[in-house]
Structures are given as C-alpha cells and as structure tokens.
Image (cartoon, rainbow, N blue to C red; front, side):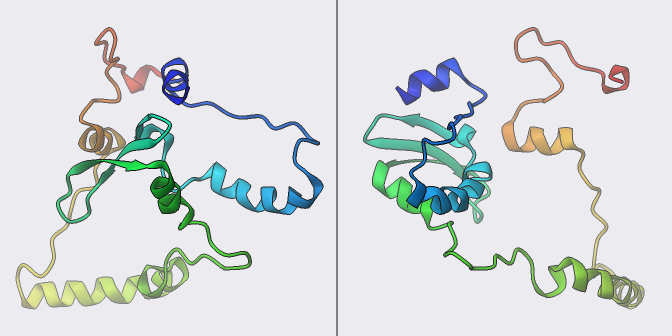
Length: 162
C-alpha cells in the first residue's frame, strides 16, 4: 500500500485528522508528537521503499560523504526514528559554545580580527571559501539541476520569474 501511495503522491501527502478522532486521554500526547510529524528526523523522500516488513532508505555518510542505501526491518527503522523524540519537558539545544547565535554575535568581531592577524604572520592559516548557490548545493546533493525540467529539459530562467 505504501509503495502505491508513493507512486500516486510522489511529492508526499498530508493526513487530515478530524477533531474528535483523538481520544481525550491521548490529546496531550498527540499535541506533543505533532511537532515531530511536522519536522520528522528523516524526509519522506529519503524512504525508497516499504514492503510491510522492511524499510529501505538512504542517508549521507558523514565520514565517506557518500550516499548509503540501507534496508532494515520495520521495528529497527521505528527505533531509529523515535530516538530523536525528546522526553517531555526536555529542552532541545541546537547549538552551543561559539556556534550559538548569541555567543557568535558577541565574539565574531574578535575572531575575525584574530584570524586576520594570524593570517598576516603565518600564510595558509585560513582560506576564504565561496558560498555555493542553492542551485550548486542542490546539484551536489541530488546530482540533478533544479532549474532544468526533468521531463522536457527546458532550463528555467530565474530572472524571468517575478
């Protein structure tokens, strides 16, 4: 059934739960889990197939930087996903130390000044890396150009879009 739904809705689908369908004692749990449905630990597009017993999905290996395809049984897959759900009341911290926005804003000037001084004394300490555009990042991740139609091959000119 899942494979047929993927074929029918390749861009995903939204489940609408009507009011009253969630039992009263589960209302708090449903509200708590809803934020993980809105931003799940894995994108639906990364799930390649579901047989009823096994799930096949891909991820990018941090060490090799290569795309890895994995097939695991359903319970293992669910276990890997639910480990990302924080205990109730747990405060998620995305960045800390110098990566925290508040701290970084405070220290960015001093860091730049220090790098500039060191760079004048010791050559090759740092290098300025050009930021990639959305198009370049998407091509690097997916291997296809997001501005070229996969059906007709027409290239979209963003300057023409209002």
